[in-house]
Image 1 (cartoon, one colour):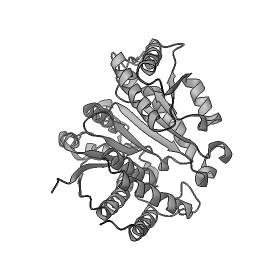
Image 2 (cartoon, rainbow, N blue to C red):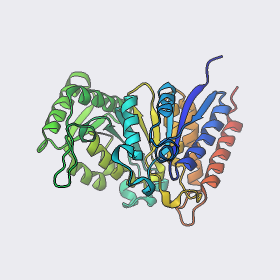
Image 3 (cartoon, rainbow, N blue to C red):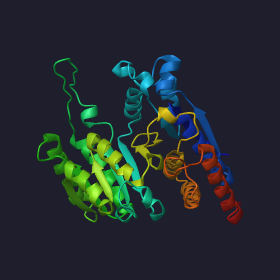
Image 4 (cartoon, helix red, strand yellow):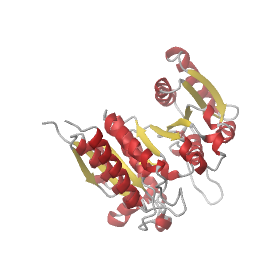
Amino acid sequence: MSDPIHIVLLPGDGIGPEVVSAAVQVMTSVAKRKNVDIRFEERPFGGAAIDDVGNPLPDATLKACKSADAILLGAIGGPKWDKQPPDLRPESGLLRLRKELGAFANLRPVSVPAALASQSVLPADRVAGTDLVVVRELTGGIYFGEPRQYGSEESFDTMRYSAIEIDRIARIAFDQAKMRGGDVTSVDKANVLASSRLWRERVTRLQVAEYPDVSLRHMYVDNAAMQLVRDPRSFDVLLTGNLFGDILSDLASTLSGSLGLLPSASLGGDTPLFEPVHGSAPDIASQGKANPVAAMLSGAMLFDELQLSELANDIRQAIDQTLKKGISTSDLSDPGVSTSYFTDHVLKALDAFTELHPSF
C-alpha cells in the first residue's frame, strides 16, 4: 500500500480557517470517492503563529511544509499585527516561506464564465469568456533585492533580476501557453528600468530559441493595466516580474467580480503551495460570510499538480453547478448564503457525481 498524500494546512488568520475547513471537506469527500488516501496536518502560520510562539513561520511549521507533498494556505494578516516589527509581521512569514520552498513561480488563473459575468465591475459583454493566467516571478525583484534601507528622511529598495531568474519564470509561462492558447504577453517597463531591459532581452531570446511555436508580445506595465480593463479577453498568459505581477494579478482578479473566486499556486520548489487570492478579511471573520470557492479551487489546483486531475475536475464541476443554481455567498449576491450552506451544496453535487459515475 502506498503512503497517503501528505498535505500541510496553514489556516492562518481572519477567514483563513473557515475557507480552509470548507476546502478540506470538499477535498476529503472527492478523495474518498476516488479511493485516494490523504493525510492532513495543520500547522500555525502568520498572525496565529505570532500569537502562539512569537514567530509568523515557526521552525516546526517550516519543517512540516518542506516534508509535505503539498501545502494549502488560507490567509494571513490583519490590523492586530500591524505594529509588529517588519520581520515579525505575518507577511514576512509568507515571503520567507516562499523563499525557503524555492517557489519562484506564482500562477493565478482568472476566468469569467458567462453565468457570472454580471458580477464583474466591468460590463458583462466585455468580460464574459475571459480566461487568462498571470505567471508572476515570486522570489526576486524589488521585494527581495539588496541593498535596502529604511530611514526617516530617505529610504530605498533595489529591483534586480538575473538571467537565470528570468529564464526559469519565462519557461513556466511558455509551457503554460503551450497547454492553453499559445500566446504570452510579457510585461515590463523596459523604457525606464535597466532590469526590465534585461527581462525583455532574455524573454525574447528564450522564445526564439526554445518556443518558436508560442506567440510573444511585449507590453509596458501601464499599458497592460489599461488593456486588462479595456479588453481582458485579448490575454492568454501574462508573464511578469514580482512587483508588476502583484499589482496586475490583483487587478485581473476583480474581473470576476469577487476575490473570493480566485485560486493561486506557487511552484518551482520541492513542495508546491496553494492559496486563495483573497486576504484575511478580518471584518467578516467567524461570521459565516466567507466565500470558500477560491480555497476549494486552490485545492483543485493542488490535485492537478499531484496528477489527480479527475479529482480536480470533479471539484470544479461541483462548484460550477452550485453557482449556476444561484447559490452564492454575500460577496456575489444579496442576500447571500453562509459559508457552510454553500459548502454543503458543493458536497451534494459531488454526491450526485458519485451516483452517476461510481468508482470501482
